[in-house]
Figure 1: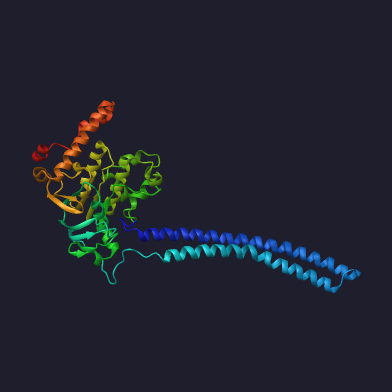
Figure 2 (figure 1 turned 180 degrees about the horizontal axis):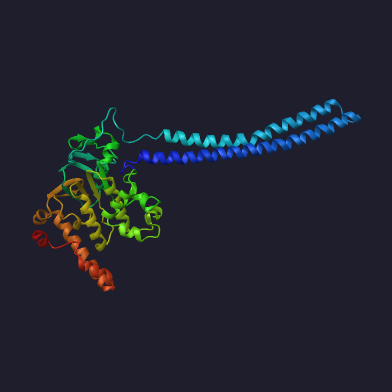
Length: 401
């Protein structure tokens, strides 16, 4: 919800659910009123009959007026508790549960707050700059140590790292899920701590590694990027993400349910939904957080084509595990132990023979081993698909390109 700035949208959905709860509560009270009325009618009829028999006893001399008053008092004292016990006990228990939940929620303090008088973020270009940023979830274990880099407007900068710790933290800091401990993060010269969170998150689109889909329709999940979008805009975004053809093959089309967390879709289909959602949002800044790391080579190629189309003319920050996805980035930043240790293009980093070149060699060896294993076990389809593309081409081929 924070990624796409839909807190108010979800609050509206919650209000709609509460309205349904309100209507159900009214029906419950109506049924209780009918129950109490019926109970009162039955009890009153019983009381009238008892009074009639008592009056006859007085007329016959077998009972006194005191006996009559005693019977009347007993019935009244019995009726009042029975009438109120069910209603009051139910309301008291429900009120105690609600009050406990309310005080628990009121006691929750947001970790990141907007400063008083903050203004919306203005993004004329989309330039991102990290200035000596340090951060730690736990003070005893620093994650980022004086990280500084710049993503020029309209350029693509990639972050790679062996351990995979500091890269994802950078995305969380950019979305301001956390505030930096020291240093600054600037977008077009504006410190993100001095702008509203809503405007900041509206300016950034993300295609995450773990695509989160709601248990709703495909159309709903795509429209989550911009909840006011029309049906035509949703379909156009799906076409650009190369998933429109698949959706139209489904019996219910865009109204097809995706299941809990999208379990009815494959990994590639879920990623395309995430891409379509980001296209629909149309942000000036794009972040790709290991968007293809969980996919096979053939699907990765198709997804990468769609991502390249989305990233065109946008400021793009790529967090990557597979180095094959960032070889065409304008700048590649290599992180180690929370610091940037190398930076440059793919060719220059390979020529330097440092950490990046070592990562490339290890991934290439792992890919070759996987292919040989696939051939050994007879996975012809996988081998054929891998033969069509090399996720880690030779350095001399990259240099020639």
